[in-house]
Structure formats: C-alpha cells, structure tokens
Length: 310
Image (cartoon, rainbow, N blue to C red; front, side, top):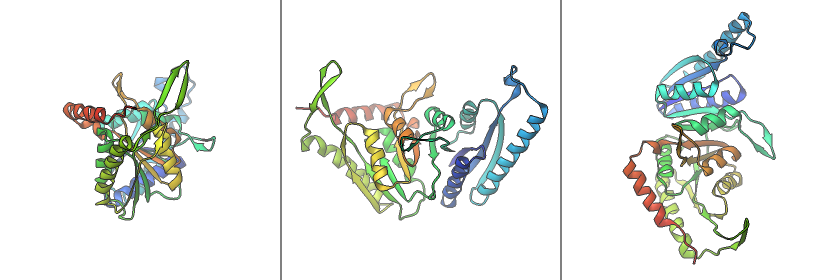
C-alpha cells in the first residue's frame, strides 16, 4: 500500500503518523511524508524576510526527520518531500504523482456543539482527493479496535469493505455493519411533510438480508462482527449515532460522490460522516477503479432495491 502522509508537526499530524506506523506493523506500507511550505515567489505582494526562509527550512527538516524516524521502524520504505505552495493543491498533486492508495492526515479542527469539526486542510483534502483518505482524530487508541462500516450494497461500499479486508488487523477487532433504512415521508407542499410512511417488513427485509450477508463475509476474517439495520430519516446521522453508541474508533464509508470539474466531491452521506463523526473516518474511493459496466450493474441493483410506499 502506498500511503501519503501530509504533516506539519502538529499534534493531529503526529497522531496520523502513529496510525501509519501501526498499520505498517502487519501490512506492507510504502510511506511518503510531505510538508508544504509558504513560497514567497507565489505571493509577491507579501513582505518576506530572507531569514524566514532559513527558519522555515529548518522547521520543515525537523518535522520530516521526526516523522521518518517514527515510520522507519515499521514501514517497508519511507520517503520525504518538501514542496512549496498552497497546502491542499500540493497534497493532492503529490498523491496523483505518487499514485497513492491512501492519504492519511490529522483532523486539526475545534470543538463546536459537542462535536470535533475538521480543519480546512483535512476537510478539503478528504473532499477532493481521488484516492482513499483516512482522517485521524487524536485519541488514546490508534489501532481501531471498534469499527463502524456503512454499507448500502453500492459499488462504493462493497469496494470499501474489500479495501479494508485486505488489511491485517487484530483478530479481536469488533465491526458493526450498518445499513440504514431511510424513513420515507409524504410531502404535502409548501415545505411541509405529512406523517412518516409506515414501512412493512417486506420493505425492510431485503436490506436486512444484504446487510447480514455482508456481515457474515466480514465475520469469516473478523469474528466479532454484528449487523444493524436502523430506520432513520438521515443515513449519515444514523451511522454517526451508531459510532457514538459503541464508542467506535473508526467509521468506514465508501464515497458515492460525482465528478465535478475533474475532481471527485463527497456524497451527502460521506460528507456528513466526515464532518460529524466523533472518531477517525476512512473514506474509500477504491470503487473509482471499477469499470463502467460494474457501475451500470450497480445502478440497476440499487433501482431494484428502491422502496415504493403502498
């Protein structure tokens, strides 16, 4: 696995470094550590003192050296890169050049309304990268003993599970596979909705069955796997609530966003989970490597699963 690790030496970045090191303990990892710096040549109207460049280079050298020293213990190889320019474009460009499988970065945000929000860099990278992204929220536990998997039978979620199953994690890892049954409402106009439409067992059963089938497949490798099919009005919120209820360390979701101006944007569910999860979030984009035929078959399957109220 080729992992790109952006770092600025912050606590959040050090947490991300620890996660990469732990993943490399039992998985072959080729890591590249990158730091992006302010480039005065790109900002001609800003004051710049030559000594600042020397100080910035010294800080960057130490940051990269510290991360490399940590990762050298477990990774197959560790390269370092110092690039200049805007941080987010620099990270995305490096990921493309290196054909990275995964970007791992820290969530450097702030607390608001009881939740830990993302910083602008982590949010932008996770939203715009064309490879999978793991956003790490600092905690005492980095090995992810409790994981929530958002599953909806789409190519994105199936490939997310496949990507995850290639990892060698502790066999005692506990996984909760969540397939949310969306609660339909009758819209009566003027922005008002009527009472929720009652779902019969025949509407819910197919979702339960596909969820349990996936849970059984995962359980072949990780025996502590459970399936959950909550009925909720918001898929992302239900996934986050499951993570909160179980004190999960990681949420795994497949991104089902659409292409825009050459970049992949986040779908509504993955975006909500990323910005509201109480734990680390792995957004898988492995499905982007699938063929058009597979995507067409996926659209047909999802159309067949659509719930039509009586």
